[in-house]
Image (cartoon, rainbow over all chains, first blue to last red; front, side, top):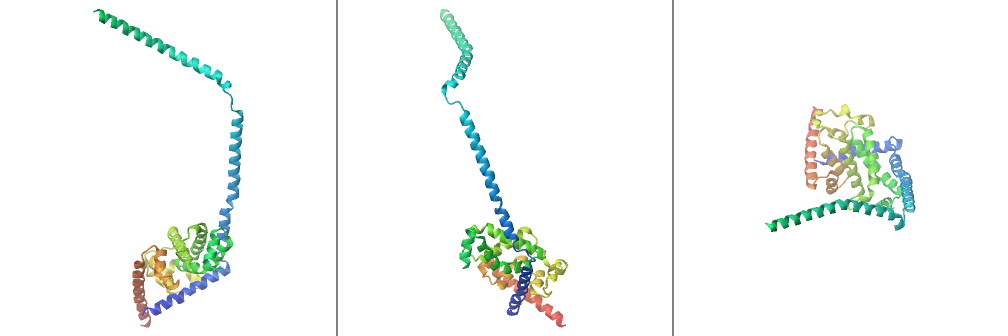
Length: 116
Length: 175
């Protein structure tokens, strides 16, 4: 019972095959379009490579210029270190004085307490 | 050159080999898309996209499946994504109102045009792939992303339904 139906599926399907062949032959469907699109997508690569190369070159140039202008001896840092040490000491002096005053007060309180 | 050799070379970037694969399968794929889409322009677009996708993802092709199965899978997924060729629930739709295949030398009583009114998109694809493309049940299941038992059951149900419809149609014509 199914055979006529299945035969018709096959038979009528060939109509679409013929139609597809005809349209492909007529160039209705632009066959090379997928090739063009693939070429177009792969055509970005040289442009990307140029950009990547220029970025690497620029970074390299910057690195080299920074490296050559960087102070390379400890003597160049001496004034800076001295200034930092002075600043550090100046900040510590008031704290040290405060500490000494507290210790003196505590000693005085202790003596008073013991004398009672 | 065999198909597997062509695929291997195409995977290595030989565009000419991929072109040969396109030439081998374009008629079968285009035929399916012309039958499946509501207008030939959608079929053209999906065909182009199928080959572009196939080229781009050729490295992920699994030789466990036939190359044609893989191409049909891509085409069908594109149809789903584009949502262009999915059938509206059928009973309510007059096929001839929006179906431009009439202008494409396909007879109105062509079974693939007639059954669009009576089966779902999944069943239509199952019928096409199994009877027209001679794909086996497992391949059809893979393309449709369904189980083999789903394919068997729905092929059977579709055939019964269509047989009844065509018998009734024949009876109406003879009266």
